[in-house]
Image (cartoon, rainbow, N blue to C red; front, side, top):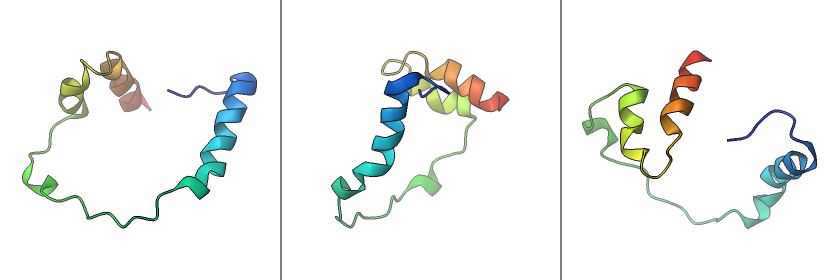
Length: 67
């Protein structure tokens, strides 16, 4: 997760976020379907399947809800 400040590396990452547009795919993707059939759940419930991949995701979800 990005942090405020961060020195040269953070500045380089910010520049890359805007300068890599030329690498953006021009492929037209199909819209995401079927999501309307999935029940709405809280953010905390939604991130549970991600815990094995992103161990800190529950803490990030908690912080996001505070903001």
